[in-house]
Length: 52
Image (cartoon, rainbow, N blue to C red; front, side, top):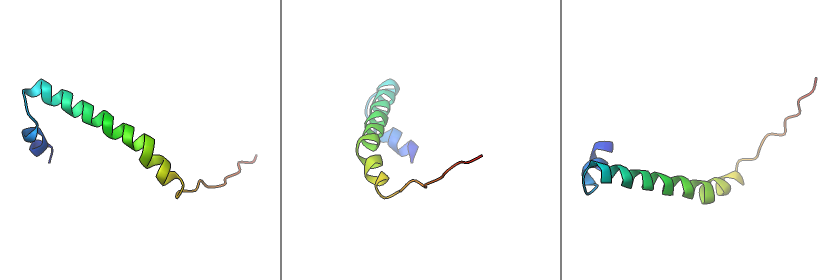
């Protein structure tokens, strides 16, 4: 899968690396901004009380 992605990207190797880094940043940004907050409403934290 990664080899196929590498072959599809245009340009020399350094341009491909820059494109992949930009794509990674965009994907992480989208996850943090929209996906994780949406999923958080369905995953309720456990009410855990730590006592001694």
